[in-house]
Every structure is written in C-alpha cells, then in structure tokens.
Length: 625
Image (spheres, rainbow, N blue to C red):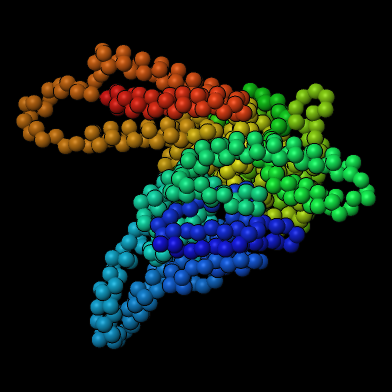
C-alpha cells in the first residue's frame, strides 16, 4: 500500500535552487535512506513531507489519517515537561489519563470514584505496560532521571528523549533527520537493531554508513537537484551507483562530442540564415542540458605538514572529577608521533573533557598533562564555535591566512578561494554570510579553518556529526596520509574502523580501558571477554570437599594441532588483508576498464568470503586461549 506520493516538488532559498520537479512514492513498511551532499536539501525534503515546510511547487499526497512522527536535527521545547511526561505524550490518550490520575491521587481528598474510573481506562489502554516500556526506552538511551526538566536537559539529552518519544508513539510514518547524532556507539547499535527489526515505515537522513546499510531497504540520492532511487541497502547502492556512473560516462562522452561539433557549426554559421541557426542553437542548448558531468568533483585535502618532535603529549597519573563524579582516574599516557586513537564511551563519561585537558581549556584535578614545544594542535569541537556568523565564507578563511601551505617546494601555496573550490563551495557562495550556510556546510567550513593551521596533532570531537558521506570519505582519505598524532572522539563506527588503530573506552568511575585495533576489533574482544566471564561465572555443583582441591584439566587448552592451526590462520589472515588492500587500490586504478573491474571485483568478493570464514575459526580458537 502506498503511504505517500510526492509530485513535482521544487524548493529554492533566495537565489539558491535546492531541487526541482522531484517525484517519488513510498510504500508501507519501506525504510528509505535519503542521501546527498550537505546543503543539497535533504532536511528540507523531510520537513516538506512532515508538513513543516511548503514547497515552491508541487505537493505531497498522503492520507490525513496517518500518524507522523518527525525527529529534527535539533530539538527545542517551549514548555516545562519532565522527560517521562514528554515521552508519554507520544500517546495522548494514555498520557492524558495518567496526568489526571496522578493529579487526583496527589490531592488530600481525591475523588475515589474518578480514580477508579481512570484506573480502568489505563488498564484498558495497557497504560501501565506502556509507562514501563517508556521508562525502559529512556534508560536505554541514557536517561535515568525520568523527572528531569526538559529545559534543564542538554542538547544531546533532548535528542535522546525525543527518540524515546517517537519509539513509544507507534507512528505510521517515522521521519528521522540525523538520528544518530549525540548518541554513543552502543546506543546507536541498539537503535539500529530496533528500527531494522520493526515494521515501521521510515524515511531518514544519516551519515552513519553502518546504520544506513542495516536499516535501509531503499536508497534515494539527491544529486544534481534531482532524485535517483536505488533498491536495496547502502552496499547495493554503491554497486549500482558505480554501474550507473560507468554507463553515463560513455553516454556523456558521445553527447559532449556532438555538442562540440554543434558549437563549431554555430561559430561558423552564416548570419543570413537566422531562422535555421536559431533552431540549431536551441537544439545545442538542449543537448548541453542533457550532459551530466558525472565525474564528480572530489574534495581534495592536500595541506602541508608541520615538524613534530619526539615529545608530543605526556600525561602522568591524570585525574579529573566534578561535583563528586570521577571522570578520569590515575591515567598515564605518553603519546607517539603516529598514534591513532579512537575514544568511545557513554555520553557524559568525560571524553570531551579529556580533549579539553590536552588543549589546556580545563585543568586536571590531579596529575599533569604536558605538551611538547613543536606541537601544533588542531582541535575540532562539537560546538564548531570558531565561526563568526557576521563574516562571509571567504572572509572567515582570510582571517586565518591569505595563502595556505599545501606542501614543499615552489608553487606549493594556494589561496582561500582555491581551497574553498577544493571543498566544493560554489564560487557564488564564497561571499555568502556564514549564517546562511546549512549545518553541514558550517562544519565543513570549520574543518577547513582548522586544517589551514597545518596541525601535527589532531583532536577531533565528534567530527562526523552533520557531515555528508562524501565529506566523510574525503576526511578519511586525508587522515590516511596524516603523519601526526590523532585522537578522535566519535560514535561513528565506520569512521573509527577506517581511521584508528587503538580504542580507549571510557567505562565510568574514571576507568579508561585500552584495546589495540579498530572499533570492530574492540567489539570482538568485548565479545570474547563477555563469553569468558560467562564461563567463569558458572557455579560448581561438586560438593565433594575431597575433590575440591583436585586440579581439573583445562578443557579449553589448545592441542598442538590447534596451536599450529591458529598460527597458520593468523599468517593467512594477514596475507588476505594485504591482498584485499591491493585489490582495492587496483580497482581505483583500473576504474575505466569494465572487464578488469569485473574480474577484480569477483576476486575481491571471494577473498572477503574466505576471510570471513577463517576469521570465525580464529575467534573459536582464540576463545579457547
């Protein structure tokens, strides 16, 4: 059953055209991931569907009876509700009955007859179960104080309370704009599982590629002011997109050749043949419009490098507590030049505080933190508060520098205008004021300002919030070539998998656990530890005290054959990973040769399948160890 139909939607803001003549439909139970570059109009489309904005042309047709819940990127409240009240308001009938019930029982002489009526009404609506479920969801998203006033809640807490409300309200259509922002990795995984397993109809915007791949049943890309639909998840989209680009490239080459010929004819055309020439001009203009330059510009970060000495960051017995809460306790760390560390943990556990201690914005309550003399810190904060809304885009860069070093030798400097081009800011936007930018564009501009200083130590606090997937890919490529020290606070699991080689997990009560490897490796180790703890926790049923002192042979001990197998598997895993990395590079090199791409893609698929199989066996043997 069709749940909504959008017909010929167009929208502009001032002189900027976001999109025009967009049409699409949505079936009940579909989960559509809407992707596209920052500023392309994704959030605007969601607001039009939710009837929060009006299109310049076109309409969205949907039944008046369908219940819609919309999760905005930023959540503001104008009334004094508690967290639980706000969540329960997602079901107004139940909420109203509870409100009256609680008001009555708090009176000195309540109307017992009405209390009894309300009790029956709440029973009939399964209200007690709903209230219990609301509390469980609030706890799951990290809200334990159900009576917390919304006006006293932080931005992240408001977002999590809003998520709890939409989940309890059981809508016909769920519209989500960046639902994973302000959530820690564990909560993102939980929300991902909930939505993926549900029968809800969902249309959502997210930069989280794992979330997109697991939840979406269809991808719609907003590209060149038009929508293109791709059935399947994010991985299916990537495959289909590559095929489309290859096809369009060959078509464009043919059209471009004809277009050049037409322009040559027009430049030599006889002035007397006005009518015929006019028709040829019209035809050539139409042909030009048909040409889509699918060789998309890529943001290229190619900034210079600063010398970094042997002393980078040294922490000794570092501690920090606030209002009786211990966030960091007795932590020692001596940084190396190429450290690449991902920092994870629940909201409020002290991750951002840790970075601010390094930048000297916050002083530790015990121990010390010292930074080397050659260190140039690039700090990218969640708030992105370095931007001045009253300045122009290019002016905000020119106050950093008139020229930016991008390497060594001659002609290794570029202007802010050229840098903005590389970051895909159109020339007609260079003189726009910062306050006119979208949230993602502001973050991209803040990133440019930070990188212009040529830092050799990067501290990134939730850098992926509000970035589109293209920008994330480019940032990841830059970090691949970054030779300084890197510390990243992030909940984006794909980003951590790509960029870090060590995980620090803030576990609470000041404890910071260290795990070698990326985020997926951390999850594997957590799973192994969890299984080991289950084994250790098994009670002993042998009450014979004589046998209690007997040495029980370790059934988990590896045999000689298994030890050899484990060693061989580790070597093979290393070889497979190296070959997979080589194939990925080769695919990029031969992207224009379809036959080579097809052959190498098949080999890549087979190697990944083999790697999955032997990794499973490696985990089985490792658990025994």
